[in-house]
Structure formats: structure tokens, C-alpha cells
Length: 229
Image (cartoon, rainbow, N blue to C red; front, side):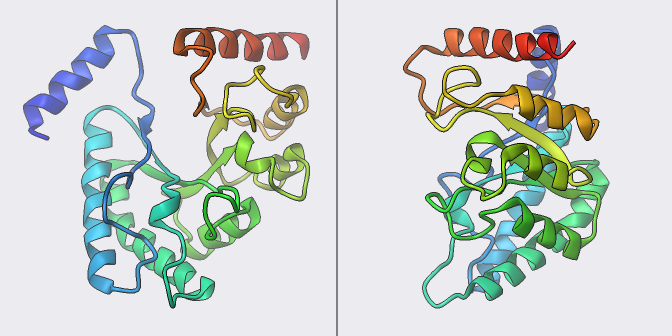
């Protein structure tokens, strides 16, 4: 994307009274892969993620949300241990660009139904700790945490020092307040760990309509916070 176009997009965001939090679905619809056995594929993946980090910074964003389940899942003949080593290599090599752009990769644990790599917050925290950079941190997603053995508030408390970003949604793939998940204990845990980052509503089922999803999700979360006093 040309520099002039990046500048115009950033101005449009500002004129609209919005903030660019970051970028999401980083590797969707690409052939890149962070756990590929071919080192050339991993090298090109690092280069591509570096371009995205620079784009994110140029747009005024900071967070690179790394979900991309298909582009991290196990490939034939690759063990989980080897895949984890590949992830360590890719994100470690990305750090110089993250430092230069002051951006952060937020690794997102996903459910076993979506991927077989980084399926729990604990597994993801271990990878983050092994990399050891403040530019590689954790994203927690309510839908994904619903598949954990521990209650969601406990996952949040255990992840206190790692959390960079937070996704609010429900197992029904709609927004907070549209399903059965009670957000009172979730927001209680976020407040207990003094989380001060963004809470982004991430939905996959838009049947109620995007405007209703946005409006009622915000209202529900505001009500939960208000009820907490």
C-alpha cells in the first residue's frame, strides 16, 4: 500500500473520531504459515508480518492480533513440539520490526475445534515467556476461553501480566449479552487484574444485524460495568 494511501486512511480514521487499535486476521487468505516445516515459507511469513507491523504503525495502531488458525495448525509430519519451535522462531525474528514500529503481536489461544496449536492460555503464555519480549503478548477471547477447563475468570487472573488485548463475544458466535455467558465475573476479573486495554467485540454470526450487534453489545457491557458500581 503506497505511503500516500496509508496517510489518507489514517486521516480518515481521525476525521471520523475513531482510533485504529490495530490489525486482525493477519494471515487470512494467504499461503503464509508460522509453523510450516519449510524455512523459506517461515522466512516469507516473517517478512509479511513485518510489512503488516509497519502498516499498523502507519495507520496509528499498535496491536497485531494473531489468530489465523489455519496458518498455525499442524501440517503433515510436523509434531506439536516442532510447530511450537517454529512459532518461537517466527515471532522472535519479528521482534526487531515490532520494536522499531512500537507494535505488539497479541497471540490468541483458540479452541481445539479451530486449531491444534496454542489452544489454551497456559500453552500460549509458555510460548510468550520463552520468547521473552514485551512486544509479544497475549490476547484473550471469551468464546475461546469457554473451551478451557478452568473458569474464564481464573484464566484471566492467571494471565494478568500477559494480557495485551481482549475479545468480547459468546459461544453462539454473537456479541456479549446475546448468549448465555455472564460477563459480570469476567469484567470483575479484568478489573481485578487492572486491565486497561481495549475490549473489542468480535462476532461471526451477524444475523441480528451489525448495527444491533454493536449497539446492544456496548449497552450490555456498559450495564455490567455500571452494576459493578
